[in-house]
Image (cartoon, rainbow, N blue to C red; front, side, top):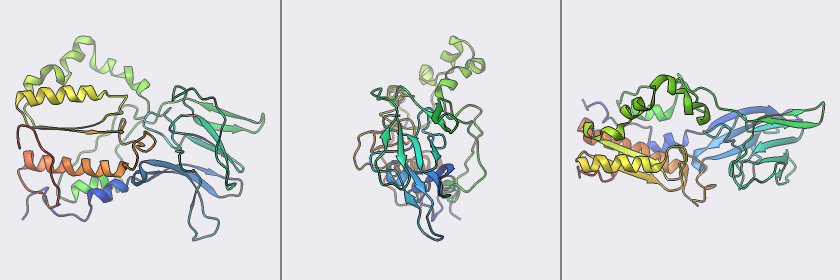
Length: 305
């Protein structure tokens, strides 16, 4: 029998990376057809407003034109459910690249028109807007995101591992997965004072590192500085432990919208696929000491290859 982790599986990293297409938010247009947001990692992480087909069995229709994406950074990880609202044949949505609100006529074939000022960036962010029919206005607020949780559903990003014999633990996260402003201080009660933070920061105790480490980081990350990852990488390399660092040009905190960040033709799904494959090969080579069933070319590991 082949060792755990080395089993062949029909669930490839490529399949898992594009299986991340999700549906967020749901509204009803004036004609009774449903409108929702689809996140599409295979299209560079695009977030697109979609309208239900007019006839049974027909195909849904994309509403968001090229150059726009329906995501709000009021929810740090790029929420889509609170990024739009519909009334009649009008939709107002938050655009990812500039975080301005835009108004668009549903089914009208017109380009979205900005309804909020241009603050030259994402300084002002909007979420959870509603139409107020009594005073003919649109009311919107800023907010944090929901609390994350482990969900008992089919997830190819999980089955990619388990179908090959790997064990995977999914932990309910007790904090907010949507607002780093909320997260900024809630650990103070858990960790303690400044000295406690120092004592629990890995970079201050590199001499105690004993395990191989592989690091992946987006160079556009404004939440966790890439310099932190580089510092840990160099320290572990100098200590002589096996270590590898992969930096993604254009990626932000998590796998985000690469095309909107100015990286043409570089798709989010490819980075997800590459990361999953290299994680598996790294663990197999340095921890499990076996060969994976997949045909994957490993990256160079310092102090090992």
